[in-house]
Length: 107
Image (cartoon, rainbow, N blue to C red; front, side):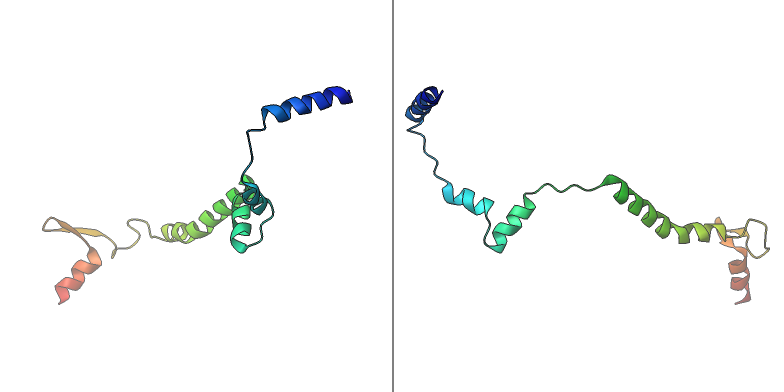
């Protein structure tokens, strides 16, 4: 077994003697970063996994909190016919609030 390993190693060394690895320092710098730039590049090179469920929950809560005032303002609007002062009046092809029309007449 040792003899076959030695023969295979010798054959492999003979076939690959013209191929040389020349980026020793670059690989070492990438694996063992020393400067802040190298450390940042190593961090940037990592895969970041973002959990989908918590991000979705936060996004839905944000939309609900931001949309609540708009929903409340729609609910607080008076219905049509609830007050005499809130009616549309047609004047010269334009529509006005009745309260605005009366205020214009007083001036």
